[in-house]
Amino acid sequence: MMPSDARSSPISSSVALIIRANRRRASSALANISPTWKSPFLLQSNGFATSLPTIGRTCRTRSFQRTVRRVSTRLLLIYARMALGVAFLSAVADRFGWWGAPGARNVAWGDFRHFLAYTGKVNPYLSASLVPALGWFATACEIVLGVALIAGFHLRWTALLSGFLLLAFATGMTIGTGIKTAFDASVFSASAAAFLLAAAAEPSASRARKR
Image 1 (spheres, helix red, strand yellow):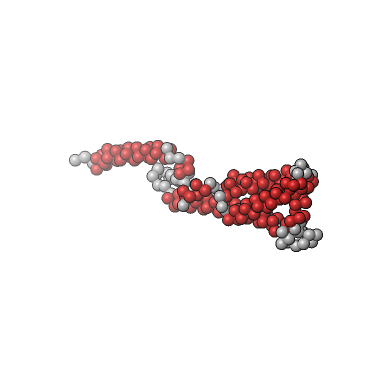
Image 2 (cartoon, rainbow, N blue to C red):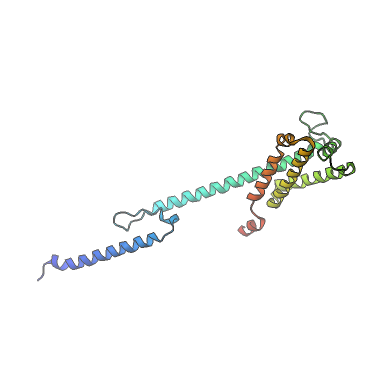
């Protein structure tokens, strides 16, 4: 009768070969995993153990980071459209005297007559007979765009049109009163913010698909 050690030796060798083959297959499979998912795996010395809690923690961390980014972006978009929309409506309120009478502190115009005089000043190339039409047109645009920005209605197009309107205001101020007044009133900055808002806003069709 053969010793037990002699009988078990071939079996032990076969088991060892199978283990080594499994290790090689596991290493090869791990090498084919994308870097995003390979990094949480912590192979131990036996070649088989993986740290599943590490995978879970990494997934939760990345999910949290994505959520924070989404929330931060959404809050910034809300802040931008509210600031632009309220600025439009505040300017309209000023020209109708809702912020105070002409000459009052921090009042730009105080009534529509003073606003039309300013409109003619920043559009010196325009015929005097067309100034009232331009003044009312600009007022209507500011009311519509201001309300649409606050409501978030078709935000991409609303922000884009707001950017062009503010750029037209800045150009008129530069021609009529000098570029310093446009810079001091931050009209170029507001126009740039509107264009950035349009670029960052999610298209309505894409938002509808997500719902």
